[in-house]
Length: 501
Image 1: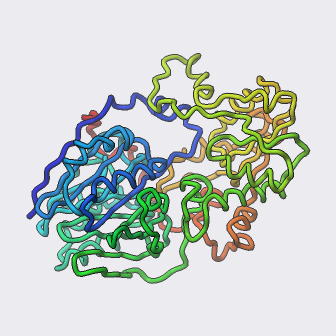
Image 2: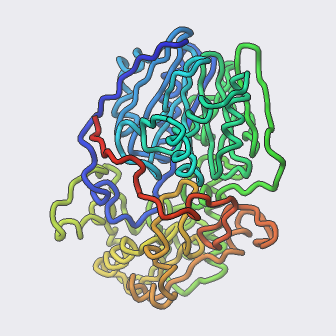
Image 3: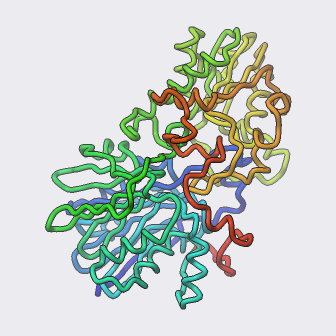
């Protein structure tokens, strides 16, 4: 049986309200990022670097669990990776050749320290740490059943369900117990787990969430994106296949494929927003795909303008593609301030209204007196878009046209993207003309669904066999939504709302 030592002290105050952390909430919010390495003497330091590269996938919290051959060690904190894991004394408290790490944006469970991953449990077979990117669509249902059976939940995150399913399994080998747990869960997941002897990666049967395999100095690495391999100089080996469970230990590599094969449905939002532009996802350059979105948008809905202006940062590659396809010059008409604190408290409505100007400032020299097209990756509630259009007009733009490098979002997501319910999605409740009027643009257009598919190299969307999980645009959910079909569930599964320390 392994011992467990660790620290879970918070690095700052608990976030006050969602608006303090996320402004007006008019953005797609990142999922999570996972990382694991086996057999390297600098496992914790390398994991910290990998998590730093994956910081865009979650800025609320970060954690690392290491194993030194005798004990597990844990460091979990609220805040950014660099706030904690750049310190040598923290890395020194994470000895061992094996480690797993996680950066978090919560889509289930509160932003409290008990939910920061990797989660850890002592099982009869030894210690077990797990990090999860995704969301289980039957997590609440399983949780309630496990609690009825006597399980004592320590967090409000759906990931903890996996720990209990493994603990309850009667199978002999640990990997058999783990696979039995995977067969019980539904939804989207990329999991990286660490035991006394093994590093284990698993990807959901449809491959909704990404997971890649790399190698550094002969040691295997699992990560959400290839950019995490690049930062440490690791070699990309391949993607973990949908439904694959891969195990690394001192004997080598063991591969399990416990699910019936089915056509994969990776999440299209990895290309639209989530993945870093320098990553390769599913064999495609994210940067080139985003440029393709912009080029296709120019073919579908161009108007006569003077400059193309991206909404930074996620709109930049699409704006480059739009400019190249249309022949209209590209200009940085908006300058983003990268040093705005995410937990800045906006105490009054009048100050809150100025929040967008903290993050974005007009570059008057590039837009004054000109007809401009603004390019952004997506439209959620429309509040930020409205402020940016007004900012452009105040800076002297003669005309402001708005283009979105994705189709209208008309359905919520249940796989790890924190989108509002349908009533909070502007495109789900308004016509195109109503949306144009709300944000104050001279014209408004979205990328078509078929155009989105063409930009990733497909002839269009085949309704009988779509190549991606595109449910936010189409309503075609690729898995069972068990929790959604039950009686309405509470937002938080625990009655106790714990503080952050």
